[in-house]
Length: 67
Image 1 (tube, rainbow, N blue to C red):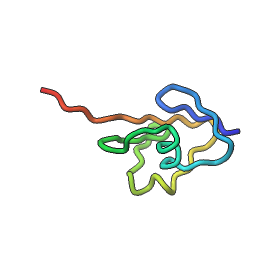
Image 2: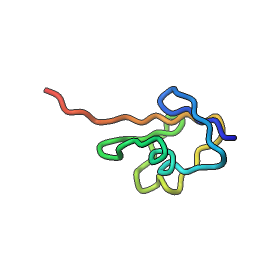
Image 3: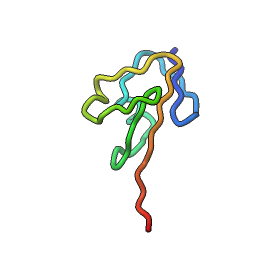
Image 4: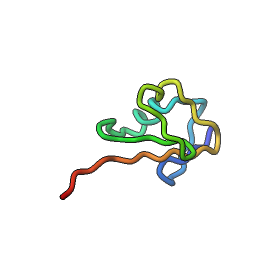
């Protein structure tokens, strides 16, 4: 099992999993989000090639409109 924190919530995955698979599995909309692994921003084009390790922390930030 792989333990990964996403926005300070712990999740367990059966095996290595890519960022784009995590986002899909957690049903997170990809519109207007930024993703960081261990405080390093990962560009959207690299999500499918980025595989977080056991104990890593993922932060997903959603852009919002405001005035």
